[in-house]
Image 1: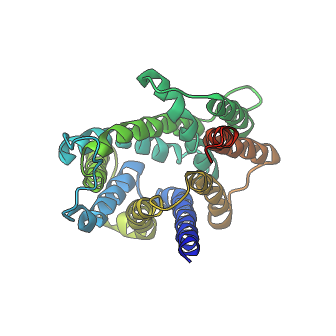
Image 2 (image 1 turned 90 degrees about the vertical axis):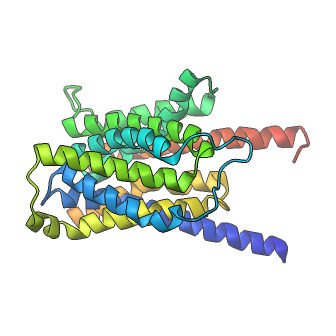
Image 3 (image 1 turned 30 degrees about the horizontal axis):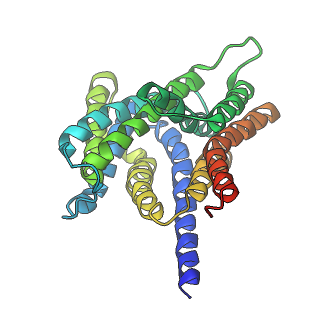
Length: 307
């Protein structure tokens, strides 16, 4: 009975992760649709502020939820400032890049951050293995088929989103250091608020902001703020307490697939056969980099009778 209960909880966690991937994938559609009315910095500014305020009830909870092994030595305000700065760079590059590329392509290119994270971790003394390099090879080949043209050039939008993926990877590494040393939900809220404020400052300098255009973009903004940031983050935190790491890797990687589906369904975006082949290679690379280490560990435990 207890084992059945655990399986049900794991299945529920998997469904929540699948829903999270769907929400984030369709978030690329909302980001692109919103810029039919407002500029990229205005869109990011409003949606991240909205997402940050969505986390306020969770942030006000008294429990610290920090790692018992690592003292909570960093104030959420300070941690959120640094994380928010890197988040601003990644989100800005992605949002501006979406002016020049499709939601589907942006979803797959952004997903490359799962390859970049372990590679960049080498510079911080973290080891990586064959899974990372095999995944990087597949992802690089996929990026070639998806984005590189006949004259070996790459589109402006694809390049901006690719650089943005580098910042998303740096953001993951930074959070892995900061989150155990402070209140994680307050860290998330502060980084969203700081990213939103910084985006709005840039928007007031470089873009024209009117109430009429904001109202016209209300649905994409609400989706991007409440669903992608507020609900998506909360679902991920809740689900990954129960989900198997392999399940989480697979299900969250489907974010790119949902972005492509959403772009086709709602925006009429169509990928060529070459592009679809590239997307398949990239998704394979993402999954291989995440799942191969788990396979090696499982095989090692079985071989040594530790299972």
